[in-house]
Each structure stands twice: as C-alpha cells, then as structure tokens.
Image 1 (cartoon, rainbow, N blue to C red):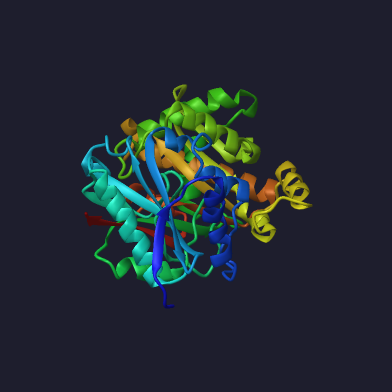
Image 2 (image 1 turned 60 degrees about the horizontal axis):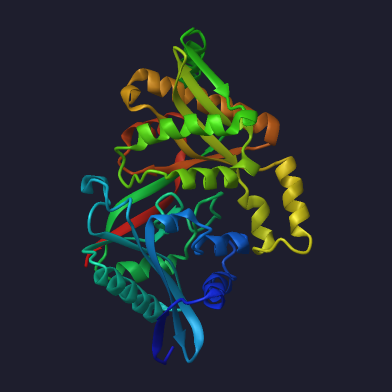
Length: 384
C-alpha cells in the first residue's frame, strides 16, 4: 500500500485505546486468534495497573498512514532482566520489543526500526524479541502450530509476522515448545509403575493445594519456582507486587485438585500448576463481557468444563534436579492431575509448556508420557 508511514509515541488514554483496538481489527479474520478481554488488554499496557512498569521502561508506538492507525509496537527495558547473568539470555544492554501488529511488511519493518532506535537511544546494544511484554507473559513469535488456537495465557501471532522478522537481520535465540497429549487414556505401563512405586514410599507425599490458605500455598510455590528456575535461560525474578498481582488474576481459575505440591520428608520440593483452558470460553466473546458474556464467564468459572488443561508451570528444587526422585515426583503429579482433569472437568486433552528447547529433563518427561510438540514460539535476537 502506498503512502508514508508515520510513527509516533503513544500519549494518553485515547491512543492507548487505539493501540488495543488495532489487534482486534487486524486479527478479526483469524479463526485461531483468541480475543483477550479488552479490559485485560488495556491493563497490560497501563502504568499503575501492570506491575511490570515498576521495574521497566516502556514506550508504546503507533504507526499511521494517511491518518489511519495501521500498526503498533512496544519497546521496553526490564531493569530486572538486564541485571541477570548474560549466560541466561538477558543481561546488561539487552532490550526488547513486542506487541507487534501491522497491516503489512513495510509498516512492521518501520515499527521494528523505531523500537530498535528507542532502545539504542537508551543505551541498549542488543535486542531479544518479541516479548509481550515480560518473559512471564507471552514470549516469542509463533513459528509452528498456526492451525489451532492457543491455550490460556499463550500467544497467537499470524504467520506473516514470522516472515517479517526473518526478513530482517534477526536470528533465533531460543525456542519455546508446548506439548499436547491425550489425557483420556492412561500413561504407558512404565510410568504407572513409577507412580505406584512412589505411592509406596512413606517419605513422599503429593497433595492438592488448599485454597483457603491461598497466600501461604502461593508462597510455597513461588519459593520452589524461584529455586527451580533460577538458572534457566530467560529467568527474571518476580517482585512482591507481581506476586500479588498474579495471585489476584489466577485465583478465579485456580482449582485445588489441579495444583499439586510434592513433599519429601515433610519438605515441599516440587509443584505442578494446571489451569482449565479459559480460552475455550473466551474465544467466542470477542473480548467483550457486556451485555451477557459476563454471565457466561461467571457460570463457567463456578463450574469449569473444558476439553483442554494447560500446565503452565512446574518445578523441582535444584538439589533434586536430574535425580530419579525428581522424575518420579513429576510423573506422580502429572498422573494425579490427569485423573482429576478427566473425572472432574471432562477434559480429554492436555498441554504442557512452554518448555525451553534445550531443557532435556522436561523434554524427556514429555516424551515418556507420549506427548507431541504442537506449538513452537521463537525468540529472536540481533545486535543493535
């Protein structure tokens, strides 16, 4: 399309609304895109509402052609991320961009160039992208699995964006994988024997979380998570504000029988969090709760019934990683959650991830329960 592309920083509520609205317009024809609730999409980019802004410098940009909004992008520098060891992927001088939406390749390239220029002006020497906006939110560009919708808290970007990025001097830095499996059938006999062996071990206890002690249970899970993931590529620690914020968002869809904590000799050493796929009920809503969708959502939250369960997080304390006990605890938690998912929620499909493409321990567990890669997200990098 002819015409000059003009890119300006987002300023004020009206332009933030235009930033949000563009995604709904450009993705309206994609049957596999799940429109987020508009209030949550707005909250993501609003200082004072999203605690990411407390430790990050963020600039949003809009692209216009002949006065009409035709693209958007975010550029950001996470001060917690640049304080990490460079061997973990982030580190000093590393900035990010994300939330890219564009009518065509020319607009996309102009937006990426503007985000890079902003990062360069701020002293960044390298970019990892896309991240929308934290690594804990929707990292990476979808590069496999365009033919089916994402599960709750996973992203979906049109395939053309992959080509737009790869036409520039970006190279893959890391791939994030999700695995799907049929949970309506039992796991292979070997896995069943491992679970049964664990059940006979008096030192092992695997239990549901207690939602009446939500804050205490969340603290246990976070403590294990920070220990288990602290050496992982891309790890950025949670702040206390982010912990509270995540707890508030998770609480409506948390189910006690879908989150397991494993104890060994009385010490919590592993956990697995599973969420009913909220996207199944959100997809037909178009991002709106009014006039009647709020009632449908409330009814589903009270008695969720879904086809898919997603495991977004699991972890085993570092001192046990690479041990037989770690695998045994993982298989026990997976099996108990599988049973509960089928019996209590009518689920037939599970999705695990994301998993780093070099996390051999988790990949081995995924292979052992006969799951298959169904989506791949790629994070790209380039020197500024």
